[in-house]
Length: 301
Image (spheres, rainbow, N blue to C red):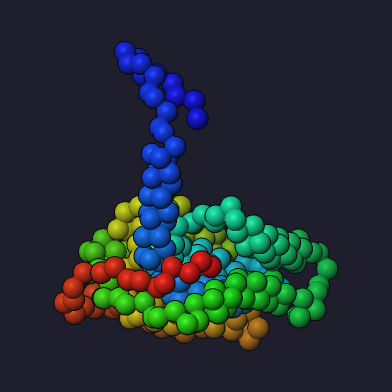
């Protein structure tokens, strides 16, 4: 490495071989400490769960698009929110969003499955001819097989490792509770819009949802950002989100394949979706000690 002198000072002396070896040993210690803070088993289950949920929503999106493209906007919003929450959940388990250079097989598999999934998705999206129903299941199946399969491999590699010793997570910040309630209200609004048949009204709903998502991403590093939901949510919030998502998907499918859904039904569904997430946002939590370190054995994925 070339040492450039700082203005007013001479060039630094290069370290001796003994000092350089000490530096390398310290790097290994730091990497080991990082590994000890990653809950590999939780990361694997997260990958499987996220792949299953995203594949289900994506498949419903394509099946609805096959019949009525204008009815897919609520599910597009749901897909974006799900991906943001998943990213925050990965940070919660200690994942750093980069892959070591030695894991070229991992990068190759991820890229191949991503290309296959996106390629089949856009092929269906741009197709002007009707395709059989089974064709619209392909992108979701690729996502489930690829990313869920990687999670299964990660879970298999944690066999024999003692379960991570964890205390209760940090208390949910007030800003995160506000963000949770806001997401609930918007998801309720999106659910209500399923019963709207006016193109202008649907365009306005879509614009409002997308503007919220764009503005929300700017708050990524704060406790009100999308990643904070994954970092701080507990099982009541995740359960409320899954049930709310299932309600949105069910009503969207009903609207596309069983005829227009009554406005009253969409109103009840939207109220239920909003109530679930707003209720989980104000739900009190038990007093618990702050998060402690955990050890998983440090095995690589």
